[in-house]
Image 1 (cartoon, rainbow, N blue to C red):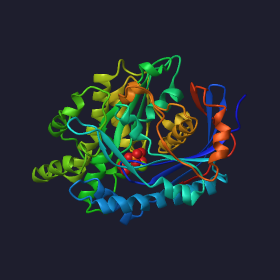
Image 2 (cartoon, rainbow, N blue to C red):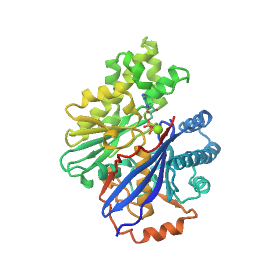
Image 3 (cartoon, rainbow, N blue to C red):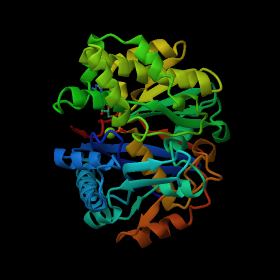
Image 4 (cartoon, rainbow, N blue to C red):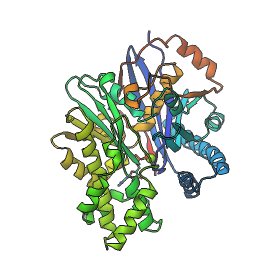
Length: 416
Ligand SMILES: Nc1ncnc2c1ncn2[C@@H]1O[C@H](COP(=O)(O)OP(=O)(O)O)[C@@H](O)[C@H]1O
Ligand SMILES: [Mg+2]
């Protein structure tokens, strides 16, 4: 017997802090298949003052514990507002919220205790939206010996597993990450790791070189008008991260302001134009992705499926098409997924699985000792009804995720 569907709101703010992504989905179980119907997608604004305070937390020299404490609650309020808009536009009552929050520190390099911190207080979200919330996903995988990333691997394998094609599912957010989905979609043969920088270096360069008036290279306009400095590109690709074997993850801790600032200083001294700097950083992102595929994927993928904000940059996409040939390059939209909404949808699924007490990780991808149920529960007024509903279903294993593509009206998509 299949249970009635649940309506779940998934939310995340990525490393770019460019907006709060919120997806409302209806999740229906059909035996071992989870059918996802997108009911609405909304990208909430982070106001400039809050964005600056979040950015300050990324720097250990600047961040203060009273700021961490306060921004945690302010982000919780911002997520709650974004989620409320998404639910209203979708015209539904929520059964569950799954909120990833905002990563402010992710420490997995050797030498210190592995740890990760996501903020955006889930209790605030539960209080404002009046519904049960699952949040704080990553620490559980860390506790099981993993790197708590990339978490998309779990859903990637269930969604993109195919009997004929191998696929590389590439996200280009602030950081780039890939999931290798082998032919047949076997989880124990999947591989996932961060490929290196996504848009983070480009964004920082633009922000600095335009004195904070622009935040990203819209449509690759600057990159397209500059030329790539091959010597600098070669040097950047020599970074030790690229030689490190997966599983591995990275973040602003490695590829952030402290990485790109000296580079810009040098470029300015050598008379490179702003466009040349941005072109070189864009090429760096594209080459690092291709380099990591050559080094670490078991074979060239038949298909590469690209999503995240970087997929909106035609210069970056053009470079990737050239470098990844003969793999076919596709985008998330080809599979019924919004370009930048994938992760919000994924967290809805991860939260749904957590509610059912079902493991929602692939240990071979995160490096953990075993699969775990990630996510802490904040019970809302509907908690007991939820528990009653899911109690009979916990033994079921979900082996496939499909995105339902309706020929009817498209769901509401709104935001910046
Ligand atoms: N039209 C566009 N042209 C170029 N870059 C874009 C465009 N739209 C989004 N981006 C890039 O994508 C980034 C946001 O991507 P996203 O997937 O939301 O990353 P994150 O998961 O880190 O938040 C922006 O900071 C920007 O660099
Ligand atoms: Mg984002």
